[in-house]
Length: 293
Image 1: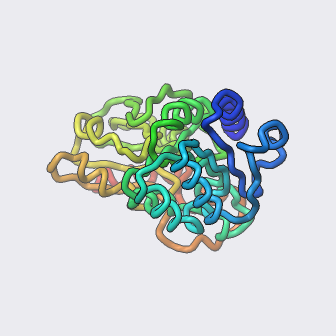
Image 2: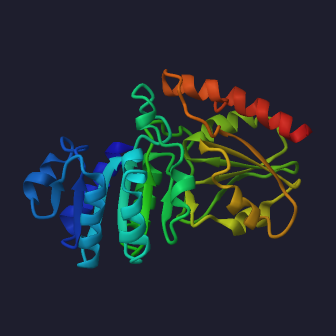
């Protein structure tokens, strides 16, 4: 996905004089060509995320669309106030591309984890939250949002889905229909979710746009009065949107998500998924319990 991101950003900087790339000491090597060829519009600001977001806001107010690339927690948490005041308050556009997702940097410890990004950023009015599951989906979402005049957060992962799904900004994709419940799979969780749902009579919806959340599709597809969420972020992050999408109907919500606790265990991404019940076996176990509850 990083290569797809680099090509998409490279194309924008080369073709649009009203776009600028800001780095916070990550991505310097792959973007070295842009830093050399367009020094006035491609800069490595350094380990200064909050200040760089403020610089991006100034560029946006001046008519230049900023593209900022960094690691998830350092943008979402360190620079949250700047995102709030510089972009949400001013109602201006900018692009914030991050790597790391929930715990892709699994061996670097909790400082490099960001399972709270969806829950945190959904509270900023106007913020678009994009969670592509494949390189192709990143490219589609990036080109759909890059110049739309809104702050857009792109949550990249190094663990892409193998199952290809054609997606559209702001829309959920209906993967299959069933009668017992709706299963919402988000981004990289699709493969494990599909495996976990083998033989189960459930509807599967695939979300790559988390904000604005596609409530209409959920409302139309809601069956069984139950919604199960499979997502690699803190549990409950999407529950308010799901309740709104139920259209006033009573709905039970559960899921295979990251528990709201400090993640202190070390290991690979796959080992963490297994420990937290986010692999296919864990999802199946939790989903079967939910369906029989």
